[in-house]
Length: 211
Image (cartoon, rainbow, N blue to C red; front, side, top):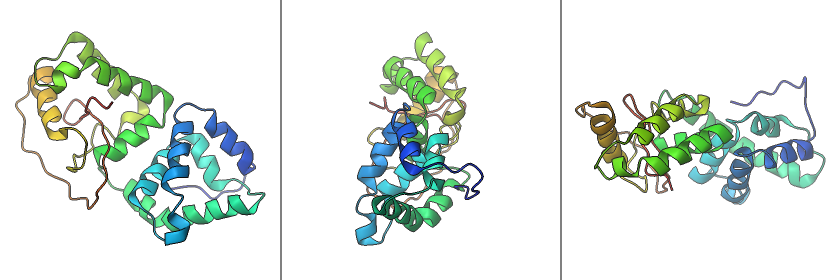
């Protein structure tokens, strides 16, 4: 998942600042700090830490944090934390389809995708509630699906742990926005007790009105 080639390695403090001041990456970095703090103590990679790392390493600045050069003990501990999670995060990212919660984290780590997702949640509330799909809603869906970091949203699966009716929004979008009768939906079995949110069109954008 993260490259270990040392051709253009930068100091970790510089990499952290670059990420922190970048919209999206800065948010992902904060999630990493809070979600991965207990990992070293427990020697186990929690789901919240996995999601934070997936979002962080989906950005160019976040990738630099994975390969940067440490200058102090705290930084080295952080790198150790990442190594504990490497296999589980790599496995999750190599899946053909990820959960819509993970796909949302990836989108929100990118400034353009985050903005497009915010507009989608703002203008598609009537669709979420099963009433109608407005012109603004259809336009926001089209803009969202054109974003590079929304690609996972287009194929993601509801895992049943969202804080919104993921499958219901999927049905509403197909019917109200695209005039399609909802087809059979295959569940994804992900053992997990956490929640998140998101959306997609053609056959899969789901959201919540991600608030």
